[in-house]
Image (cartoon, rainbow, N blue to C red; front, side, top):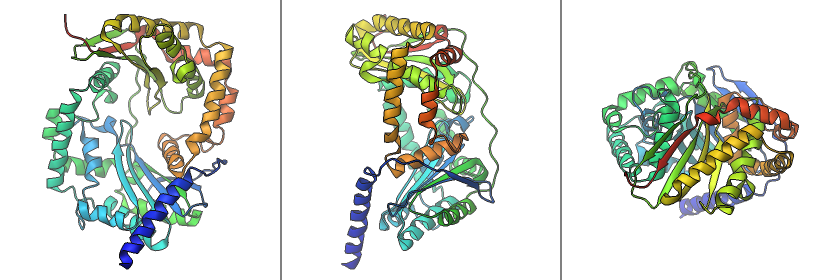
Length: 441
């Protein structure tokens, strides 16, 4: 009975804290940074108002590091949830659950992520952090769970073939990046998933989840001294190793390419774009504003006005720059009726060419600047938001004042500079266009 009451109180407190996080006023975020003896980079922001701490490990071990086995980063990430040499997957989940902690792993193109949220009550935090270090120091990669993950991944590939958005996204990246590591599919291929073994995942973990290849973000109700102790424990649990070599750069495209993929759907899914922007590029702030005017600003954007309001070709259309470790994509997405595909593509190209050639006008720029700056506090509304941004800053090696000076840097963008940087980072005559929908002639 006492155990049930204690468990209920933990979950009630945790739920209350999650709601309370949304009410925290936005304040200046002061980042403290250091490095552990093993080479793990640490970023820390104290948030003493709530008895909770968020930890986020990021490693240069995303899908771009799959090599000859696409899907390996994903399979490795999933395997970390399958238990340790002392606990199976169910026991691991129960251990975190017993103290109201949340543990997760994921894998993106650039990075692998391991996260933990726990209350700071000493006994509960000790159990949660101790379990995390057990996972990092002795992951089991059990054969049965690995086979189950393999089957699930193969089933996911089958489902993706039935989804026009997945079909289009996969081909879009293949055409944009060709032989570059960004061109492979994070979910793997049938032959590579069938060929890989748990030893491949173990080897990937040992190399890419090394302390010297990662960063740790910490935010919450722990002091600097406590944060240093947490970082030291976590770092000591990780494999030893240095950072992997940087990814090769992506050259700017010189020729356009268009591909249409037959698919039995009433809507055509359109993807248009090109590699354009790396994380940390000085043009990031200017291009954020430029894109807001083109297609990132919702109802007021040029694409929305031209595609939907003026011509009724789609319910929504959106553009974005997605900066990555090396040149990440500029992307336009929209759906339209199959019989309107040619008109929609023509409008998109016309608007991109005009945007690139003429730039953004002063009125658009100021409206974009105001919207971007006013929405920025929402990105710092909770501990989970802050730790996610800290993880991004640590992984990509951005400056400690990135958050503190974000608004200042947006305010400093000049119209001429923005239009010049837009012209330098994107060639509108060499866009990749993928259209999924309609039948073959």
